[in-house]
Image 1 (cartoon, rainbow, N blue to C red):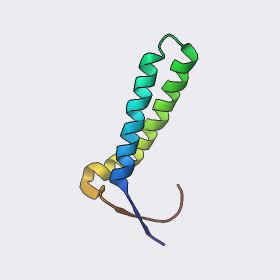
Image 2: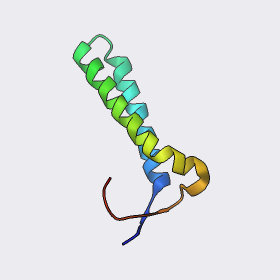
Image 3: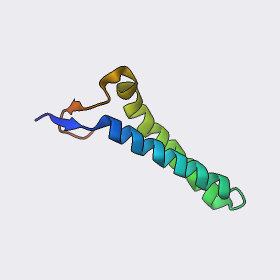
Image 4: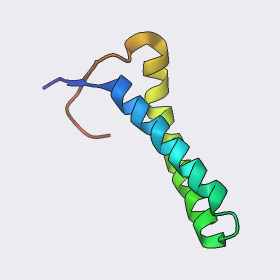
Length: 71
């Protein structure tokens, strides 16, 4: 069953996560474990961006009908 997916809201939240992670990375430069783990978080956020950015940029970002399953 198809359901509405709020792509614009998801995209906004992913961008907020990215800003927070980059800020954490900047203040954690002197803390190697924090810096490395934050770099991993940013890589995961990049994957989330790739999942949503094409749909949002193409104008389909308001609401999108999903398949209902997880990918």
